[in-house]
Image (cartoon, rainbow, N blue to C red; front, side, top):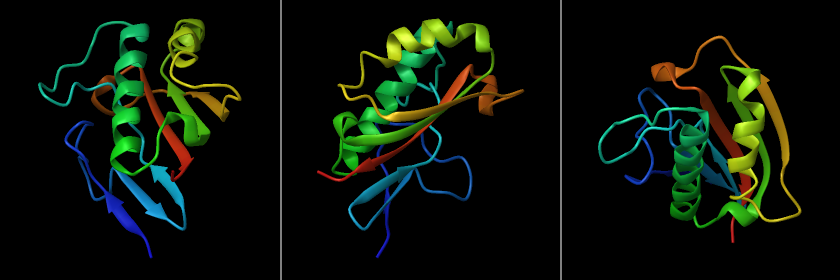
Length: 125
């Protein structure tokens, strides 16, 4: 049976979707953007946005009974491939080795015109 996951420590869903779904010992997150949940603010710069998006992702996974150490796959959508290095520096601090599998795709536009969005698949603890 699938269970919707919701937390106020990550940006709320802004459409007909769940922040995450837990099913059969797995957690599947929706795309998480770098919005500060308490204020709605968006940090400046790709590194600061990566920090906020990954913090939001971590909070969402915790609410689902998982964590960053349980992530097996991420997909990162970035607005500018030139920001790949700066985002990677932040990204590596959130995940222990072995790092999760990952896809990274440059896209034309993201919700709220942010610089990145990240989604994850994780095991439940």
